[in-house]
Image 1 (cartoon, helix red, strand yellow):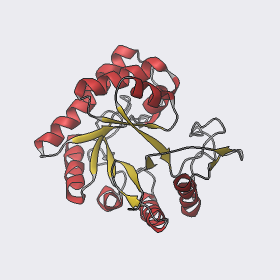
Image 2 (image 1 turned 90 degrees about the vertical axis):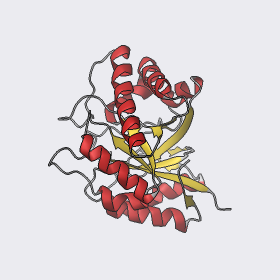
Image 3 (image 1 turned 135 degrees about the vertical axis):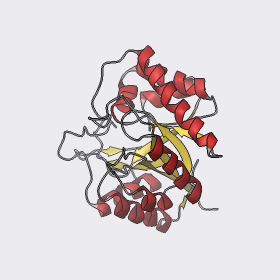
Amino acid sequence: MRPSIDFNCDVGESFGPWRMGQDDALLPFASSANIACGMHAGDPMVIQHTIGLCQQHGVAIGAHPGLPDLQGFGRRTLHMNATEIHAFVLYQVSALAGMARASGAEVQHVKPHGALYHMANEQAEVAAAITDAIRDVSPTLKVYAQAQSRFAQIAQQRGLCVIEEAFAERRYEADGRLTPRDHPDAVIHDVDLAAQQVGQLLVGDGLLARTGERLRLRADTICLHGDRPDALEFARHLRQAIEAAGWRVAAP
């Protein structure tokens, strides 16, 4: 049997009449989806529609909670204490789980968004608050966390199933962290270079960090950001590259 890898995309990020992404066309290439829960992006109508798309295409449904920052798209760090973070994550995951259940579906995983994701990697109390909130919704929910991160370690220590994640079109620093988005080389814009990075992940050759070092990362899932304007082209090309390398795309 061919080895398998999950291919996840961030989706459901439109809001009211404002459109972001091409979710209808993008989701057929994914095996799991991280649906915005209304704090950094998304709204109830968008959430409901995106759940339906996932059901239509057999894509595993995940909650994508973020900081309450629509204007900054959840990518700005907000100063919130652990109690606040726990409540905001609990609220978002519970809301998405309830809407999914009303449609005859179930949420399979949770992946924090943007600044919240990075805060969990850097601050143990934030990671603990997020994982406790996830566990309070359901201890069977999987947690998508950056490979070899503090967040992944804390989620595992709290008894949750961790799916370690790497990124198709983001640069890495020599210490394994993602290159900050304010750096001009943070995002890979060439789809062939992104496919090359995915290939390195699949065969274990080691990712090439922005400054030239080799990083040994093992990943269970590969992420593509659905908000980029060329996300559909990237999704099609990356899915083809994964399958051409002899791997099967499937949710964990």
